[in-house]
Amino acid sequence: MNVDASVALMESDITLSHGDQAPLVGRDKVDAMLRGFAGYKVTAYTLAADATSVAGDSAQQHGHWAQDVTAPDGKAMHVSGTFDATWHHDADGAWRIAKMHTQN
Image (cartoon, rainbow, N blue to C red; front, side):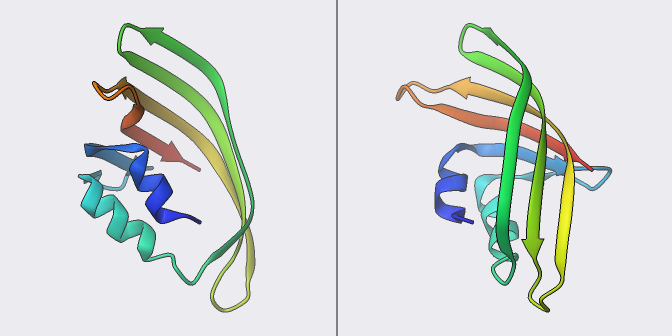
């Protein structure tokens, strides 16, 4: 899990939420949350967009994801769900995630 690369895909004021949990707002908060999983090892990861629409400098995606993960205690887990993402095409030419919601 490359936290630096993941965070680089996000706008500085990203909103990230999961299920009915309160959203995290800001790249720094998302970075801290991801680093909290440092003891976990992702052994398989799938992310697929089922639908993508683009309008100007904005894109919307809906899709599904799945992960096989080994917890710090050695327990193997499989987690999966859906995601909805909003991307913005920034002035520097990069597409970055502005908002993402996931759920199991």
